[in-house]
Length: 118
Image (cartoon, rainbow, N blue to C red):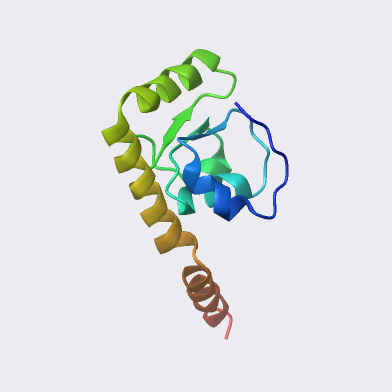
């Protein structure tokens, strides 16, 4: 396990990771989780409202109750042991990130929102 802190070159390194573990609720919009999803890295994270928008449990990652260390470890172990599942979930996460949270998708959603005020 390596904790690298803020890295401007994260997009270069993320695809080399086997999973991203986000055990706590940072609040707001979790950029590290979204970056990992976009890179095709499976995510095991605390079940928080802002993460439910990004991760579909069991499909594009795993969500566990906050503070459930055993649950985090169980899903991480499952992904480490099953390369096919790791690949499948990573690709599903990437697809979700690109289809829902890409620049184009976000601009389209904001334009739709703004048009309701016109």
